[in-house]
Length: 345
Image (cartoon, rainbow, N blue to C red):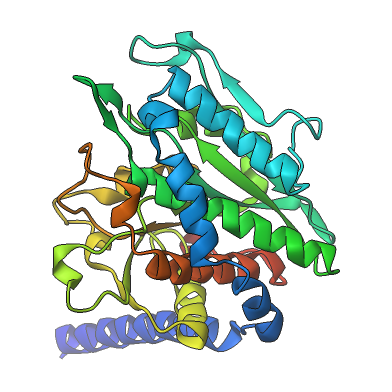
């Protein structure tokens, strides 16, 4: 009888604990409200396929020679990004005019020249000390055996998406809709050689990491993989629930409210063999307990080949995916509270 009673008590305690956790999840779902719906979509619709295409044909063209870290093409690409932000009247967070975060050659694991992250910034009006980072790496593989590795999808698509997202937020700011929190638009170098640009940033942050509320990282969002050839209305999301279930729920609500993509979490499985969670720049932010989402279209036959060219991008799909990320960033930048971390639940 005593053993039976103990088992019954333990079963009851376990059941209560499970119920308590599920109640917390339901409370998170109930408490997340989508705000500013009309404004979100008004400015999301300023992100246009035609503008993304114009930018990407330049960015993934021969002029930038495949953008290998430390090489002339990467330097030219960095200056292109700087010029874009200056033309849009989007300032740098470094003395308002220094858009480059310099990384010395001695920092890199491999032998190469110095490089730089490119940073632009919109200051929050209510909680400027809290920062949302939206990132994309802008380097690629350069020239090999006289062939240019253009990197249109990897990661030209993420780079031009970030430019358009920044422009949309700036247009909103000019119309009186400044974000509550600050937003850092972070173009990272040296991703292809081991996530070294993001590692440098997290070791030398411009804004304190404990005030960085989340990182939305964009790496390859312009193509369709073989799995989704018959359903191109998809996007892989990786990492959203790893550190904050609330981030995952918010992301889902934004999608369900505005876009209805099939959000595929196949690569978010911790046992998934490709290990994509640790293969792009968000991972260095996650190491510092910063909630992340990695947006990704999956690999395709042109991945890391010179045939990854701008003519193969689906620009209408790139437009809608970029709008989804913008709308998610808007909600994160304008919500009342920081995200609840899983460890606090």
